[in-house]
Each structure stands twice: as C-alpha cells, then as structure tokens.
Amino acid sequence: MKYQSQKVAYAYFLVAMGLFGIQVAGGLLAGWIYISPNTLSEVLPFNIIRMIHTNALIVWLLLGFFGAAYFLVPEESEREIWSVKLAYLQLIILVVGTLGAVIGYLVGIHGGREFLEQPLWVKGGILVAAVIFLINISMTVLAGRKTAITGVLLTGLWLLSLLWIFAFINPDNLSLDKMYWWFVVHLWVEGTWELVMAAILAFLMLKLTGVDREVVEKWLYVIVATALFSGILGTGHHFYWIGLPSYWQWTGSIFSAFEVVPFFAMMSFAFIMVWKGRRNHPNKAALLWALGSATVAFFGAGVWGFLHTFHGVNFYTHGTQITAAHGHLSFYGAYVAMNLAIITYAMPLLRGRAPYNQVLNMISFWLMTGGMAFMTFVLTFAGTIQTHMQRIVGDSFMDVQDQLSLFYVMRFGAGIAVVLGAVLFIYSQVVVRREIIAPNTSPLLGEAA
Image (cartoon, rainbow, N blue to C red; front, side):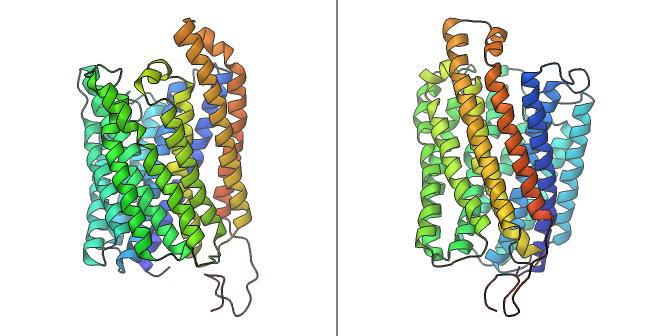
C-alpha cells in the first residue's frame, strides 16, 4: 500500500463482506421456501426475505465499488484521497440507511417496487452518500494524475449515481413506472456498472500481469465503447411487453444482441493480458478471481442473456426460471466475482502482509462458481419446462410449480455450495494464519527485498 488514505477501503470491504454473508444466507432461505412454501410464512414472509436478499446484493456490490475506488484511485492519481473524513461519513450514511431499510422491511415498511423498495428517506440518504463520494473521488482525480482507468471508473460512478435519481420518480401510469424503473435497473447493471467492472479489471491486469499501460488502456476503450453502444438502446429488451411503442421490440432485440460483445471483449482482454504478462505475481487467488469473473460474466450476462433477448423468444420466456438463471449467473460473474477479486488483491496490501490463505480462497472460488454454474443449469432446465407447460400448453402456474419441485431441490443444493464458498471466502480474508517468511523476503510482495 503506497498511500495511507487507502485504508478507507478496508472498512468498506469489511462491511461489504458482512452484507455479502447476509445476502447469500437470505438467498438460501428463499431457495428453501421454494421447496417448503410455508416456512416462516407468518414470521418472515417470502417477499420480505427476497427484498433482503436482493437489496443486500445491490448495497454490498456498491460498497465494494466504492471501496475499490478508494483503493485504486490514490495509486492511479498518485496522491492521497481528498478527504478521508468524508469517505467515512459516506460509509456511515450507507450503513445507517441499510439498517433502516432492513428494519423497515421486517415490520412491513417498504415501497413495493422491486429492487427499489427502500423508504424515501433511505433513497435520499443513498443520494447524499453518492454526492459525497463523487465530490471526494473527483477532487482526488482532478488534483492528481489522470489515467484511462480513473476516467472510465469516474464515468461509470457518476452515471450510476445520476441514474439513481430515477428511483424517486414513481408515476401512477404502470407503463411509465416500469420504464423509469428500468432506467435504474438496466442502465446500472448493463451499462454503468460494466464501466466500473472494466476499470477494476484493467487495474488488476495492470498490477497482476505487468503488461504495459498503453496496451491495457487500448483494450479498456474498446470495452467501454461496445458496452455503451449496446447497453443504452439494449434497454429496449425490457420494453417489449410493458405497454411502450412496438418499435422497441426490434430496437431492443438488435442492440441487446450486441451486449454479448463487451463481455466477450473483457474475457479476451483478461486472458490475453495474462498470456502477454511478464510478472509472476504472488497473489494467485486474485488472478483466479479476475479471470473467473471475466469468463463467468461472458456466459452469464452474454450467452445466457442472448438466449432470450429476442422478442419472439422473450414473449414466451420472460418472467420464468430462465430469467432467474440468467440473473444469478450474470450478477455473480460480472459483479460479485469482480468485487471479490479486488478484495482478494487489496486486503493483503491493506493489512501489510503477503497474500494469505490463498488455497482456502481458491477453494471458495470453485465452490461458489461450481455451485452457481449448477444452479444456472438447473434453473435453465426448469425454465424451459415451465415455458412449455405454462406458456404453450396453458397449465396453471401452481400446477407447473409442483412439477418443478425436483429442480428446486437441486437448486437448494447448489445454494448450499455457494454459501459454504462465501463463508470460506470471508474466513480467508478476515482470519490471518501465521506464516513463516524467509529473512530476506518482503512480507508484502513475497519476493526478494
């Protein structure tokens, strides 16, 4: 670690990992309710559990992004963070807002809009925290060295913060409501978040492989261009059946088909950088997570998204378990794994040690990735059967759900693997085991001092 203010990232990563644990635990409980629907039905209804599961996911990923920014921007800008106090104030606001939202959900206070269920005061708190972050990180970048990585990162973070304003717009007309809703949800995960992911991946490739910055930046610009080109009008694949004009069917189909391109570019970028790299970096676990994230994102967001992105297919598949399969694998690959990659890289540096518990960390990668891959295949098969029985044959929803019970049992088994992997990952980061270091070896880099 080169700059003292980077220690701010440590607090963000700890809170993010705590919420990550809550998120996967909530997901496992929700998966069990698919098998035994009356579980906790009066104490903790399924809709509340699902809110906690999805909201914890979004908040911990954002905290990971903020922590990644506070870690990498000082190194890229070659200066300390503009205000450490503001960074901690931002974290406190986000933690208080998160706790307030969860407590509200538990007593039945929520907005009712999927992913945007937060009470108005919590939404306002998130906006204030975002403004604090933007001022803090922008002032740091403006006062220091400018690089493509900080430029792309800032663009992504500014846009995702500005798009949050649409969360406050809740018109009475249902079609307009869903349109503004997708302005947040889609343009986050299939637009601005991709820029943040690409910037973090570029930073990791720069540090882990030793490839020249010029090469990394050229790839980064290509990824950003394709992400924005496909992602913005690709929003149209959510407009097919919500009452908007019919031209969105072809617009959405054509542009969302190109959304596979930036993820393929990111996967190619990661492997080519490793192939060209000259550095044998000691943190093998961080490299595994970075490569794994780019690969799984390509399949989850790219391939599985492409499977049902054309309106003629989506007419039958939207809202089925095929959507759930795509959602789980894409979120895990693109954003969960990338956050875990930067945490794996940064934590040893923040704590002034050699990379530690790497074997446990890599086992956690294979547990989570294997579990999520199996879950995706199970939900894909379940969704295919559901589409045929419910949308083609015309069987009732509950009758179809009864026929899918075996798939839900297998999905729950996959969820157990994911939770075990998450627990192992958190343990590998938080609990440091004693290591014997040779006297002429740097404890930070694991190479001759």
